[in-house]
Image (cartoon, rainbow, N blue to C red; front, side, top):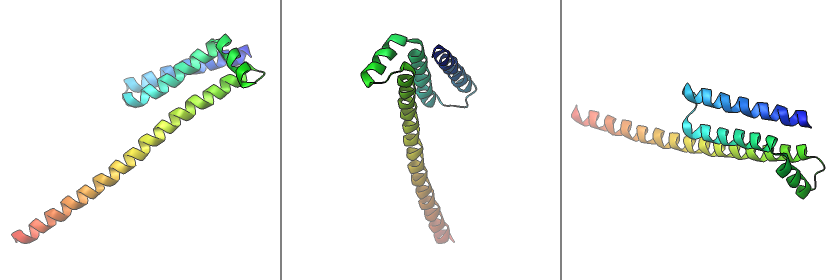
Length: 117
């Protein structure tokens, strides 16, 4: 079990470094990197803090704190994925609105060109 906690700690540190590197190279926006950084820090904190994890696993009725850690990881990353689903949906709505406005402007411009001739 200690090996699992060590591997998860290393993976969370790698995730933090990857997000910070992507942020520095401007491959990811700051508002999106915050979600990933929070998730990585939560993963690191959970993999290092054994006593709260043992208490949580006992409260959940799990025999193994590693199972509670995996459940917490699943919950944290489902939250991150849900947030990005909302962002993608919002961007799709904004694209539809933009296309409609461009179509209206093109229609108005064609009308002006027809009147000027």
